[in-house]
Image (cartoon, rainbow, N blue to C red):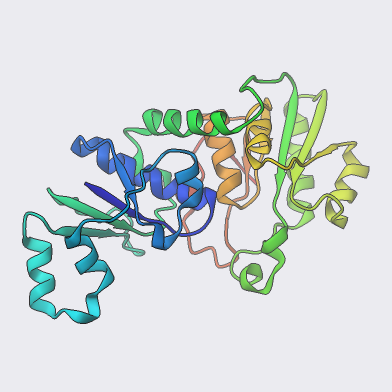
Length: 278
């Protein structure tokens, strides 16, 4: 049994699901159960994880009531056949992960596609099918269309501004110019959560772009997947549109060379070698 405790919204949850699915594939476990106390509504709505009315007693004892036990009882819960072993990501070495031979609790962000290389096609196919079921748009590639995802919104808030931060307008202008050197595009479409932001309006004037935003985020998701080329922002939502629509070996993706202001995450963690870094 695998029980997943999620963090963040859709893009973050997809990374966590991908890692849990990888562990499950290695161990012959197809069902991943969600601990709803930690969120996970997005991947639950997609049908990627299962919900249970009550989680196993051993899991609840170990994770829910740690303050009631002592080191000895925790040791027994981890070592007993019906107990749970927790997999947590080591920030200094994300690959130092030991997978136990019994029930598994997974807790972490795992924002590194290299953690599930080997089963990437199965994982990407599962997620793509789930996304398409939620969208009103079919997955059909357009010719000579450049899609751009611009994330503003909460990235401008104090909570994220100094750690992640919204990308400067020059990143998008530079990326568009680099893409235009490869070919001309019949259409350039920007998908964004802030239609009237000055940066976006400036890009519209300079490059004659079309601005798009729908009430259904899955329509935006598939709309970006359908483009022939894509420029992503520093968001996990954006990353997954590129991974699902273009794959991990495409040269038609332009990505920022860092996803955080702190640059704590190595480039290789989020950008496959074939993607173009700007």
